[in-house]
Length: 120
Image (spheres, helix red, strand yellow):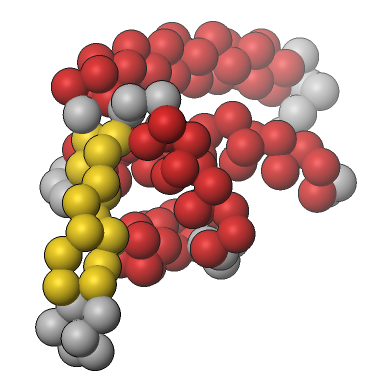
């Protein structure tokens, strides 16, 4: 399959997925990347900082998530923790409701193509 199609699926859903992860609880960047890889690596591929952090910054700039800095126990530095805001939760509810309708609609097209013999 052409990678550009897969990339479009990922691009369209990754913001919602990151909001879902943060709806589960506060997390720092590396932890978010790790969870994304563990839970969605077979679909999203390896999670990369260059992909995840720009989305986090965009979500934060939009007021959908917020961050705080806290000391890192391991090296004496700091960690930036992200959490979802009320606006982010409201958007996530809207996005997940739309996603359910979207999947149902697409599944209907797929089932119709299968019945017609166009898809196995």
